[in-house]
Image (tube, rainbow, N blue to C red; front, top):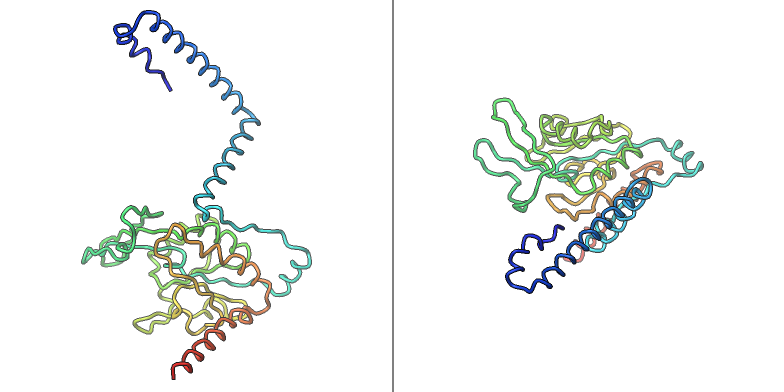
Length: 294
């Protein structure tokens, strides 16, 4: 920081004896020389390999300090190399298909209705919420609609992991003209989600829409879906992994929580042998509650 003493020296001459002014000026010059020496030392320290090491160390310390105040920032999942025996097991059971819902599972989107000008879904967000993407979607016969898209926290890390373990497929009840753009942005050219199913591939039983998983893969033993809407997988409850609905929550960690389970599930011969347990347990709970209140 530049000292203010030189700019104020004229006033100091009027208010203080000459000796004090001289001492102040000399002291300022000494501090200036000292500051220059410190700057030279810092530039030397941050140059070359030593500088790279110091920068990495400082970044590591900053992350640790940040984790104390925001524990969710420190959450991650480590991909560990599997043993030859486990690799053989994976080869035996085969690679499985993971179907992912889009809206309220991976992202939340809101828009302004072109007819009524109402903000659909935006009233659920804080005023200062900043979208990750802003899309202009043109539907035939309707003026372009502006969508604000908010990514679920950790979605990029989640997709990177599961695309290594599974054949990832997007299956959404949204219109293709909108959803295709969102998925392209999430994929970012990495080719993680080449197969995609949209509104036209759903079973329409108004007012709700269900998804036909057999369109994705006829082998239900190696297929599972993650969706926030139970009705979407009503015909395939033993192939479903529910997830909490996402609207807007910077501290959301639901996708990270699923990674250890999904990592282990790929080693099973039939996913229904594991996911079906949730269905059985839910049925037993409902039966117990029902009998209690008879």
